[in-house]
Amino acid sequence: MTRTFLGYPRANGAVGVRNHVAVISVMDNCNPVTRAICQAVDMTLPVTTLFVRGQYGHDLEVAFNTLAGMGRNPNIAAVLLVGLEEQTTEEVARRIRPAGKPVESINLQPHGTINAVAEGTRRALKLALAASAARRAPCPVSSLLVGVECGGSDTTSGLTCNPTIGAMADRLVGDGGSVIISETSEFLGAEHLFAARAADQAVGKAFVEAVTRLEREAVSRGMDIRGTNPTQDNIRGGLTTIEEKALGAMAKAGTTPLRSVLAYGEAPAGKGLHFMDAPAPAVENLTAMAAAGCQLIFFGTGVGNPIGNMVAPTVKVCGNVNTLRTMADNIDFDASAILEKGSKAGSVGERLYDFAIEVASGTRTTSELLDVRETAISRFAPTI
Amino acid sequence: MPRAIVLHRGDNVATLIDTGQSGETCTLQGESAGEVVLLQAVPFGHKVCVRATPAGGDILKYGQVIGRAARALAVGEHAHVHNVESARGRGDLAEGRP
Image (cartoon, rainbow over all chains, first blue to last red; front, top):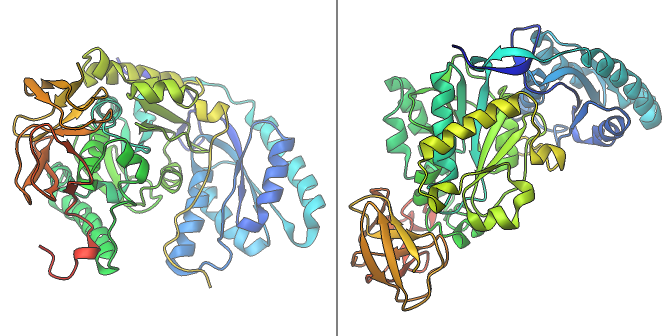
């Protein structure tokens, strides 16, 4: 029997696990209006951004595509874009429209702040009223695309939370769903093991090239990545080298074949496990996953990293007994039974899979309820 | 007695899952058994050397190389950034990388 969750079926066949109206800033100077509209209207989600103005070329394409990707995400019922002027706003709007959901926009020029907030609030209210008519219905788990992330890692991460997430990922892929693992720098020292899982030679080559490109970049700039990755909190948590961190981080991907290599924020074309070439820091990495269409993210942590994504509810999984005590308000799932009771990651992962279905059906996460959420789009070139 | 996990039979380090004090005997579990006397305090989650390793020798965890010994490591010694170093992403060694 196909396993199901209670989701929001969308017009384009995708399924949301939440039902928000996204109010999206087209560039940084729009953020105050975005926030004001979201304070006024329930069901809205502020998706703010830094920069965009002055970005060009590939860097600007990434920014537009990432903003639009968050708008297209199936957790979003409708979008209100807040822009400075029509032309740039339209660049984002036209990338969202193919998802078949309402997309409206309000520009600061020539209305000014007060009128833009007033008109934006009116439009957001209409969008939210219409969106609130949506009802959850049983949907197959195969419609889920899940991001797997780790942050604030320590040596418990590779022993507890990450293998637990990996076991859950295997179950989801086995049921026809999809998974994205990312954080390119956190494959240094483990890439040979992951490359061996590539579905074909071209995918394996593309993956190894992404890791090699990153290392070559660090070396050519004369950088020593020690102290940046692993970070100082990773080191306090017992992680000695990036190789050790990578071997533990890779456990999040489970054991299924690697199907494709994605660019920053790119949506996978098929089912199964995918790798996204993107910077490792959580906020910009989670943003890319949400832009790729992930409805949920599973985030393993050891010494504790509270941050979640705005668009994709982020489930914090921890197996460090100390962190579970000191940062309980930031953890959603306890995986400590692996070290404390000798439980197998497979059986704890089975419980996490059950919990995934609950969260997909509406159970809230700590980062949603405490609103510890942030958005950041990676920058790949200077602004002019 | 503090516990330490050995993840692969060939590993020369084990990960403590309790806090260990200097002079305490640590129980090995996982893919190995036995005991190791800690030569220093080893914090929760940190590693202890379980097989004497010469300077420059590979440090093995999960049966994989996680770095190399910056100096000789004795059994019971805290193995971390002060005596183990990464071999990856080392732009500082770009000239004549070993």
